[in-house]
Image 1 (cartoon, rainbow, N blue to C red):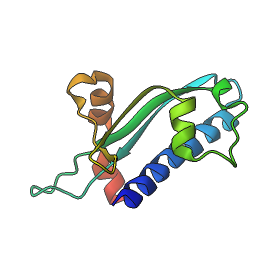
Image 2: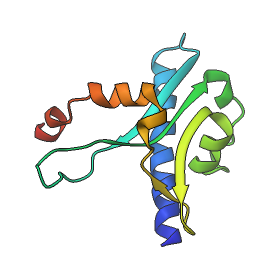
Image 3: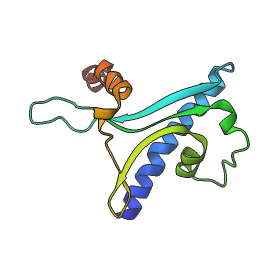
Image 4: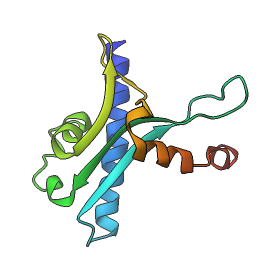
Length: 122
């Protein structure tokens, strides 16, 4: 189980980093970006998709300068380069858990603004 949890963290943080690198490449004047990793689990018993926030953070462009991309894994880079990180890991495996949005009004507002039905149907 630890291997699975570690692989999933690498996958999620890898997607976050690729997206940030692309944003900085496409918008040269962008100095910082906030990013949120969201997953939509299976539909509940009522057929509703309820998105979950897995990770969030902020990254300044200069934080990517000097990173040894070939030597560091994505979880290490996420932890070292991003600020205002939000992530919940539990259990002996340190598996990612959905972030409780009670104390995160900005993340809650973001989730409420997403129409997952459009994404699921497309």
